[in-house]
Image: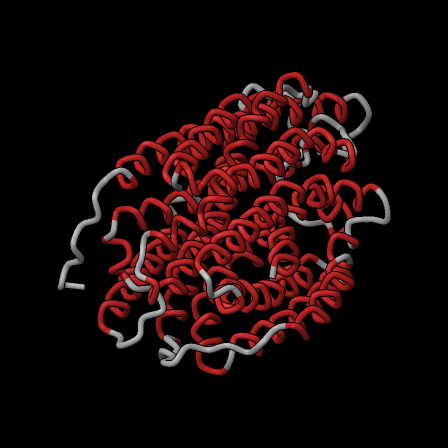
Length: 493
């Protein structure tokens, strides 16, 4: 289980240091790069709970093995992609396989460790595996991209997938005595709502936030979300029980997972673009500069997992978000050289927060609900985490694109009418920074690159500032929820 979770979680963050290489080789726009990330996390978020129910009906081991095969084959497809559209499509198939793995992993783990103390230790190691993969992604990606190339961040999944497939021979089939019906209507409504909302966020700067298309997409997303809530209230076996969110403890855990992913995890993608396209570091150099974040999270996760039985889950959940927010605020002072001295303090704080929060999440979700709701609780928390990554990448990307264009527009206008200003601003908004304006004549090219570098650097600083403030606000709300007594569920849901 841990190898599989490490592999599929690694694929969320390992891509960060490869985005500049993908952008260069496949001539991908910023929106295409965002879909390389969200094309994976969106089907993972939308399909996770349905995969868990399907596992309950036809066998968790069967769904796990099928998901592993799909994930491994799709990884090979990603490695062989010749265009950004092909890569995005393969990433979407990867996400479907990942949903099948994530949706059945914890229930299989629970069946393998029926005794409470053993299960608690197993869940702690499981959470530590997630934290380790999240933190190790940039470093592993840097080694692979700087070595054999960016395609190897996907090819590495093939031997790992085959190894995990052999390990599946040791798994016993499991399913509950009563399997719920699969809520396909809820899955379609949730996935549709997320798709149109992310499309609106990603296309907003290009099409105009007040344009009929963007307003229509936001309206459609709101309608689909409202329809999803109404559907879940009435269906016999909902994919997501709204009653869970009436329990403050569970709502706090779900919010913590969402907020950490939407702020810290999502911001790392734009940090990687900054370190390569603005500061000019190699992918390996980028991974090495992120090493303090990686190492700190790797240490914090198992230490937290061991301490949770004494401290409870509330301190690491709240403290994790506070540390993540503080780390992001420190990163907001990043300079155009990507100086390690500026970033290290932020990385250490954020790494402590990431490791502590991830290690406590699974145990906190299980503690907040009845044993019969354990599968849905952990599945819902994991879904919130993937939704957070998708939403954070889209929202922070929209902010970075708008800020970079605004920062550069006046100076680009001063270069004269001979410069294709719209094209150059589009490249700056795409995060190309020092690589923008390569078609311009010497002298003008260097000036344009300098403007682009400065504008993009300031925009990335704004991304970290916004993410840090959002993380601290979420920490305050989590503290209110996690320290409240559980309210009695309302009969209206």
